Length: 401
Ligand code: SF4
Image (cartoon, rainbow, N blue to C red):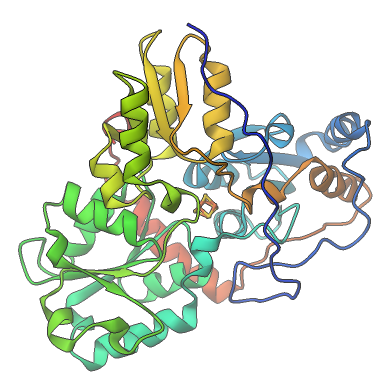
């Protein structure tokens, strides 16, 4: 059977992000200097030559959601957590070129040595989810939770997809970081710090409400009624004092602009069109999508599940389009479908293209370090506390994710 995956008819317009540097936001700035033209036929050769000239001085990381034209130059590919660990395991590399988004490059800077420079080829490659919770909003929310007598029962947990400032907040408030692979273990750990899941302990989870809700309800056995949503634009997040006292999970009103687009109707439609299809989605999808799917798991879980699947099997995958397209190409003996009808690239991930990579590598060859991501020492130290708490948690078998 050949793959049924088809290329979307048109690429989406890239999201135009902020033009000013905003230190508390994922939004970046335009690249300084001259970018090569995207139509330059010599771009691949230029990237190869610069890569070769730099040799072991450079290590290139490529997130699974990156474009093929960039991924071909990655020394290693992975999700955000794996890539941060890979960066930390390369102390000999003078430059870490991170083909991903801003918060990932920040985590790499926290986990690498001061003598290593982490470079993001396009500073406008932010993350809309990470932007939905900034540190002043989270500090303000925590102050309100303290005032109503809830914070002392609560542990903050931030998803890896957040700014370094939020990770630091968790570090100094007894909390931790989690990933989509270990959210169950991390949230359970957080409850245990205040008496356990069966006590009146609470977890304040940000920025992705869907990962928090799916973890609490589907993995820890809490109910939907145990979860409240904190809207940073409203007093008490839009809740009453009583509701906050009764809640077990306080979920930040944030979501991924890619995974949040999948709908229950997409699942119903593909099941009607492809009998026997296996629906496989990321836990950043809504509760309705996740509960109507067959398999749920992180990016690495999705890749491993498809790799282990029977030839001839049919899959509908709800995650970023670059990855789904690569899976379809890698497994022509399966029928692989994208869960949505319309294009669903992550527009910020797609900011990193071949011209930006060439520009970054050639700048390094010329002795300039462009777009260096630097997290200040205090934020680094506090964020590392939260990251280290996560790293100390027992590993979960990714295959059962
Ligand atoms: S896919 Fe979602 S969470 Fe990942 S970088 Fe894009 S917007 Fe952020």
